[in-house]
Length: 359
Image (cartoon, rainbow, N blue to C red):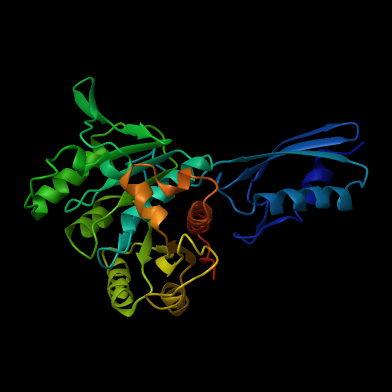
């Protein structure tokens, strides 16, 4: 008969690859049960989007067979508990706030934000999405929610906005409250007030990740978010050409400024290459090659992935059915990989470990 101590000792030889410590030390093993030859336990991953789930599962099985008994029948329940950024007491139900930013417009930042949010949701996380791009809110169109208005719910003396839920993601956008044909001259105090309402006057419920689509460039919105809310980190979107990379560097330097100090989770290179639909095996590097990947290496941050320039991505956004919903499309798979890597970087950051660079 095996003992619980033998099982835990065996599993202490299994290291969580990202965090660099064993599963027992990290308190990732629960509910150890032994019934004759059967050994069962639960592994608590740091995110449901963990890309190393199968690797950890196999390592646990091998450890039991090697250190306990080769005849043991091992049954593992792989579940998750998303880690939370420290200092998030003002938002106890929102574990991680992730900004999606770009140094310049037109690089597909909102496309990345939308597909990232849905990707995390598809992988089992509880996700919200705020469209904080006050100058050009596009989330209503990309979810086919033009003209939608969130409901309001009164709890005691407080009135809360109820985010609209679609594709498994809870949504609020500046665009839900403005006329799409009418320009609004936003000024600093108005920006701060509007953002506070989206965050604090909404009933988000419990969220693992709240994705925030920010305006391009550097300005009031980014500073307001960094100084008023517990931001876990930022995902930076760029295209490969030099003019975009130059602006990307400026955006990254802003997040690193004293008083802002937002960690960079990594870089996504959008429009990395062009693939004609009639020639799906051909790649044309219209804007240069691997500029985002090289920048990530130069500044020592994670390269989260590259997204090709394909017509289907733009069309999917325009009809309100983001490409990641099409499970068979190669670009959907690319976004799923990026979602997993973002979750991975969040877990590493929250564990207080040095960032793992994924190049």
